[in-house]
Length: 275
Image (cartoon, rainbow, N blue to C red; front, side):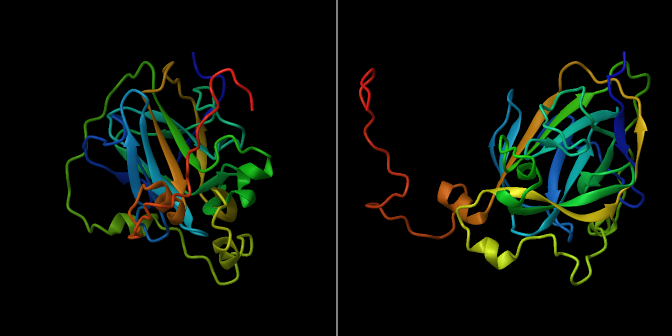
């Protein structure tokens, strides 16, 4: 029996790339990178893996557009439910990463990039890092999963045929990134983004993802029967560099003061005794 909803597969000329049969470091079926317009990946800092799935911090850059690059490392189709700040990036609805949600379908050994919130079968509005108060999710009053890019991977049921991995081939290491990069925005086209200097003055503001410029990114609807449970989840918590420094996730070269800690812990009240 098919899912109760149709699913969406990404068909973008020039950015669907063959990948080798390498093992995924994040999930046995797929791997995920968050990339900028240059094709370079935003740095990840893994914190856990295993039965709960892959979890990592991601260093975000204020005002920077980004794309989600997903690579299928299997000989079968997989469906991937993607939520940014808790919202399904296809439907815009609050997401639980469930198999009956709208999802992107990736063919055997394929890799593609998704660059924004889908507003039609042909268009998306680009993702970009911003203060959470200016984010797409906050526009709906949803702060339940701020600063999180979450994915659930579903294998297809009743697979009739598996495709062998493509033969390795030599290519310019930058060719894929160049082909995948959308055209740069012209000057004056970024008016929907908050002023970058104003953002920098609000260091305590949590990171979020905005609803940016329109991009042509065509899709088509197909039938896809997902297995009952996901084969894995990938959770990326993106933060500004100063937040990662403060959390001790990255070393920013600042000498710590042994007599001053902004996160001081105080003695708790005894159990059963009220304040």
